[in-house]
Length: 380
Image (cartoon, rainbow, N blue to C red; front, side, top):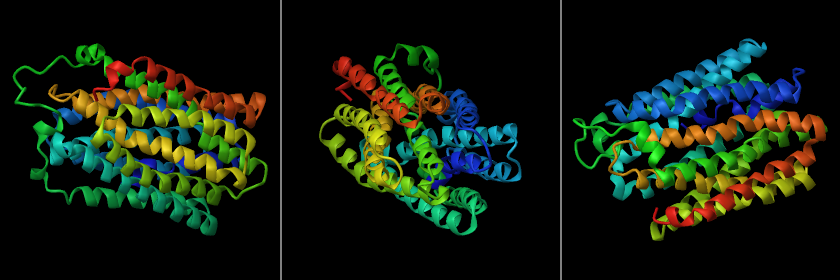
């Protein structure tokens, strides 16, 4: 499922650049796709809460990945590429709340932290292997092989999730209900808007990803533009390094949260972005890929465990856990969706180096916000 979620995303930028696209236009197409995913994520979370077939919400993203891979191979027209990014974003939007719901429905609150941590470790290991295969196949056979591989993983993921017995997933527990609340469900939007910890978490993540999301694609574009790297193999290397680090940090985050809470785990994740921006400024190409991506792996790896954990703990008993997951991803997606366009156009104006410094500065803002509301967040 890991490669299905990331899909063709890391390779789209250099694929289009080699076909004559400017960085600003590439960022715009990616941003439109991200905005579409952002708009649908919260409703999808609500549908997953209400659904009695959680596995369906993994099957649908798998189909979207296959479509996205096919479309971008058939045509590099701006709107065709944009539509493929929308399909990929729909897949990414559904997969996190779907897997969270399935995990919670199987393990319940008591076992959620441990199972979610292991899930994320396997998720990052899958991304690492998928990226390595993509890099090898892309180097040997071109980008067509990369997109075919993503589609194949989507089909395999559909088959795998259907192997999970439907009866092993408790739908009531999966949405965070302590008792049957079907007669008087809480007002969804009012609950989300009144929930201070959820709002703080979402806003801090949005600021973080406004800076973080553009660094990897811009770093790849900078290296390829300067002739320092082969497109597919370079992108694959950045992904492999980051995902390898995330395997370890996911397990560390799981252990840390089981002893205390998720607050310090997320704080540390925010602090790595400014350091990463500075390193990306001074180091480009193969010289900088290892330290830049190790830091990305640490920050993102910590968040993949801690963010679903905070939402699951804070919304336990409301019956709206997956809706909350979707809402957090939506607000976080505001930052992530604007980041490629922001970074792409700024890079055209002032160059890649200063852009990395500017993007890294958003991590300082997230850190400040997280510290300011620490009292409200430390209980989770």
